[in-house]
Image 1: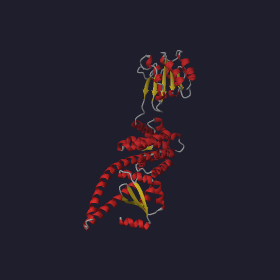
Image 2: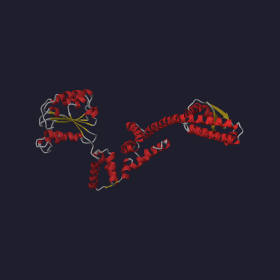
Image 3: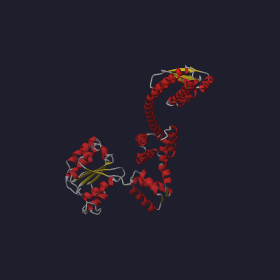
Image 4: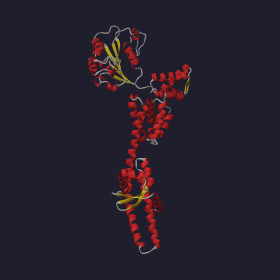
Length: 448
């Protein structure tokens, strides 16, 4: 700013909302025109500083780009007047707030004036969305990107206000206010002022009055999400909707994820996708709790897909070992049956022992296959009313207690059962079903 080079006489101030962009632009305007300053800080006492403070000069102009977006507004207010010499100040100053709101045509008109600047004109642009400002403008100005104030300084500022106003406070409550205000001083003071009607700035009062959640509530919610239980998650969302600002809750959860992501990277990264989707749409959604349920239903579907893929890989691995075990058992059983033909009672007992083992394996196989049926009702009926009686080369014989519900389910889901059994055994199979009365069925189970 100390240089007279034309390339340095235009500025772009960009930083988050409510961090005094316009105020800083006014201070910069006074610093450029100050008559009494020797260190490039405005004295606030000279004639030029007084003119800017009192708005009594036409050489200092502030424009709200949100209200003057079109090219005609820019030409009328800026371009047609920029060629005139300043009347009272050293330089004409044009402060354009929210400059990203200008139209493309207005930017092009402004660009011509900025790229061929006059020594007596300075543009100070301010924006909260730098990505919307054309690169042709950015390349011709000095860009100052400011950050929000640190957490500890924000808390100290709130602490000073509490001391001055004689508010009773808790340190954790001030930290919570600083966090939810996203380290914007204006928001922090607003929240502090709202809670101050209760005279005590406590964590409980901040949570209840501002409809925000504590870390304990957020941690409890993530514990429920980790159980993958849709009913519990939806129930908890309904409870939160009764007393929590769900938009603010999503922001707090993303902050919590950032602090704890290394505890369980896969879980927190996937959960962050659900909250990111909520953040994108929650402002425009009339029923935010429904949006939460939609997002977490997708999250639960991702877990089911992950488990199915994992189970398929496990089944493939097990099927290879099962084939080897099956070949060994068949060979052993054949050898024993040949020995039984010689009349040995001891060898006959050994054959029966092998058959008992096979029956046990069949029960375990059936329970394992039924476990992957998606419907819990179907799963329970098949487990209670049906089992594997015998497995031959390519045929699986099922026995059944003649339940009407199980008959209906088997007619509908027999293909799914075949596919699961084929994956488990590693070969193509066909199902044969033998219907029995309940007495015959349970008597058969006792002898198996």
